[in-house]
Amino acid sequence: MAKTKWIVDPTHSSIDFSVKHMMIAKVKGTFHAFEANIEADPNDLTSANIQVAVDVSSVDTRNGDRDAHLRSGDFFDGENHPKMTFQSTSIVKTGDGEYDVKGDLTIRGVTRPETLSVTFEGAGKDPWGNEKVGYSATGSIKRSDFGLTYNAVLETGGVLIGDEIKISIEIEAVQQA
Picture (cartoon, rainbow, N blue to C red):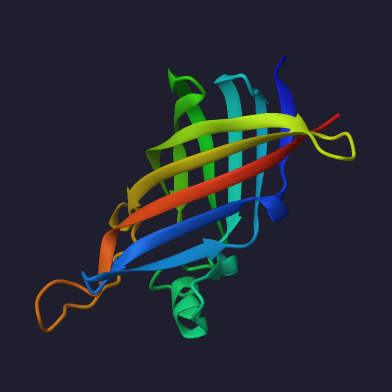
């Protein structure tokens, strides 16, 4: 298949994360508002161009007070930095339908190179004749690398919020004419 343009279907896609809390448990969250454009041959992502923009105000950890705190200047500073973005820079095939997608991730005005492990999940036509593809991606980042350093020391030692953020992405995209 030739390189074509794909638009992410956000109703069938998700961007989720988890972070260690109090060094004993994990808090999970999701971003409900995002868009992505992909120019790719789904059978060979090595020449793809992938752009993602996430609305940080859409963060949802199932706790309104925590979500408001995440939107504040202590974390995402959504008033001054309403989007976090990812732009692919290189893609290496690591196995059958498996890729390392390297790119520039920008959070809170700080841009750093990061890598996601991506799996091509398949392609097919939906009941209305639209060509669709699916991808899964995982990775992790250090929030401190992006200036998200808010924390509290625990009385028992350690910190309230872990530095490593684990990322899990599920994408369903539709081919554009």
